[in-house]
Image (tube, rainbow, N blue to C red; front, side):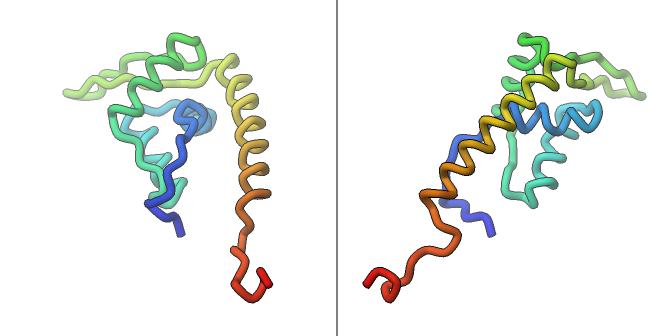
Length: 116
C-alpha cells in the first residue's frame, strides 16, 4: 500500500498527458482519472493541475476548447500528436528512473538475519 510518508516529485505533465491519451477531458475529469487510476495514491489539486495544463497548452502538447453544457462552461483538453510524442519520451524516462530506484530499493528489505 502507498505510504503517505514517501515524497517523490512526480511528473505531473506525464500523468496528465497519459490520461488525455485515452480521450479529451475537463480539468476535474483529469484529476479524478489520476486519483482513480492510482487507487487514491495520487491526488492533484488545482494548484498542481492547472499550471501543468497551461504549460502543456503553451508547448502545444494539448489543446483546449470551451464547452458550454447547460449553465456551465468548462475547458475540455485533448492531447495533440506532439503531446503523444512527448508522452512516449516521458514514459521511457520514467521507466528508466523506476528501474534505477528498484535496483537501490529492494522489494523486500533485508532482515537482520540476512545482514549477518
